[in-house]
Image (tube, rainbow over all chains, first blue to last red; front, top):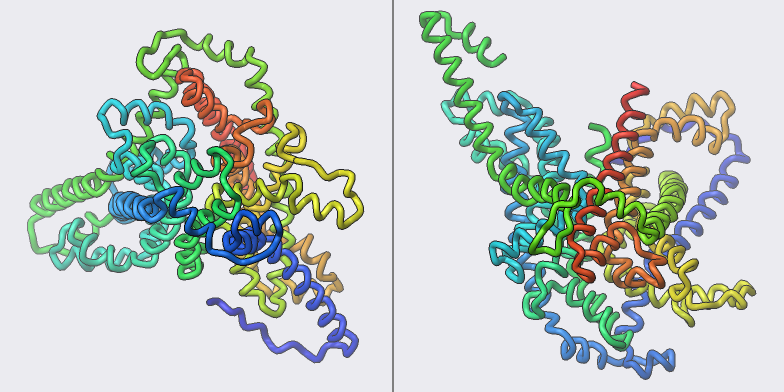
Length: 285
Length: 310
C-alpha cells in the first residue's frame, strides 16, 4: 500500500549486518509465537468441530457427526439468513442516513449546524446498555418486539453516529470546487449530492459497510432482547442461547462457533484495508 | 462566503436583485442542508436521544416496565447504599487495571512489526484477524481454555506449576482475571493496528539524525517514537476503556453469566440482570445512567488533557 522508500544507506560497519540479521530472526520468532496465540481459537474450533463427542473425550479422531448434530439442534441456516437480512437492512439505514448527513455537515453551511453535529456525534458516547431498557419498552409499545424491523432499527440507529462522523471527515477531504462546479451547472445541493458526491464517496461507504457488517453480525445483546422467538434469532444469538443452555457437546458448539464466524472472517480477509483505515480515522482529525 | 463571490462575479445585474438572489440561495442552501440531515436526525433522535432522556427520567422512579412511580434523585442513594453495586463497581475497577496491559502488549507487537521483519504483512493480518469474530465465539473458546482440564492447566503443568491447576471460572477471584485476560487478548489486534498506523505517520528521517547522535534503537524508540504517538495512545486508551466497560456483555454472558457470586458482574451486565432477570427496570435504567456518566467523565478528562497541551 504505502511502502516507504528508504534511501540507500551508506556502507555500514561490517559488524552491523550479522547483528541485525540475528535481531530480525528473533523478532520473527517472537511474532510467530504471538500469531500462534492469536490464532489459537481458530485452531481449537477447526480441530474439535470435526470430532464426535466421544472422540473429543478420547482426544483424537475425525468425524462430521458434530456438524450434523449442530443442524439438528438449531436452525443454523435460517439463523444465518436472519443475520444477513438484519445486517443488510440496518446497513441500508446507516449508509443512507450517514452519507446524506456527512455531506450536509461537510459541504453545506447553515445555522445551528454545529449544535446538530455535536448532538448526533455525541450519541456515539452513549453506551447501548444505557438506552436499551427504554428502547425495549418503547418498541414493545408499538408492537415491534420479535420482528426483524426492531433489530434493524436499533442497529441502524446505533451505527449511524459513528458512520456520520466517518462520512463527514471523508467529505471534508473532497475539494469544494467539485461541489461549486455542480452548483454553477445549475444543480441543487440534493442533485450535487446524488450525482457527484455519492460517487466520489465510494471508498468511505465501503468502510462503513464493512465495519458495520462485522459489528452487527457479531452482536448478541440487541438480538437477544429484540428477537426472542427461535425462528427469527440471528446466528450469534442462536449460538449464545445454545451455549448457555443445558450441557451441549463441545464439538457441536465449536461447529456452530466456526460456522457463525465464517462470514465475518471472509469479509475481513477481503476488506481488511478498509477496516484498518476506518479504525484509526478519528485519530488525526 | 459563496454569496460574496457571486455578488462580485455578476456586476451587470442591479445590486438589489443580486442581494435577494444571494439571500434565496442561502435559504435554499439551509433547506437542502436540513433536508439531508433529516434521516440521520430522525433515526438518532428517536432511537438514541429520546431513550437516554427517558433513562434519566426512569432512573428516578420505581419502574417495572409498565407502571413507574416517581421516587426522585434519592433513588440513587438507595443504589449507592447497595453493597452489590459496590461489588460490581469493583469488578469494573479490576478491568480498568487490565487496560495498561491491553495497551502495552500491542505497543510492543506494533514496534516489532514496524521493524518490517520477513512476513510482517502476514503477521499484521493474522494478529488483527480475531477482531472479526464475535465475543460469543471468543467466549466459547475461552471457557474451554480456563476450564479444568484446559489449555491453561496444561501450560501450568508444562512449566512445573501443575499444583495451580484449577477450574479458573469457578472461583470469583480467578474468574475476573480470566475474563480480563480474554479481554486483553481481544484488544491486541485493534490496538496493534492503532499503533502501527501511528508509527507509519512518523517521518523516518528523524531516526537517522538520532542514529548519528549515537542513540540506539531502544533509546530512539523511547525518546522519539513514544512522544510522537501521544494522540494514538489517547485514542487507544479511550477505546480500550469503552470496550472494557460496554462491550464485554456477551463475553461475560458466555463465560460466567456474571458469577460466581457477582464475581464477574460489571455495570453493563448488572443492567441486564436487574432489568431482564429481576424486572427492576428503574434500577437497570439508573445503572445505565451511572455507566454513561462514568464514560462521559473519562472522555471529558481525556479531552481536557488533549486541549490543555495544545
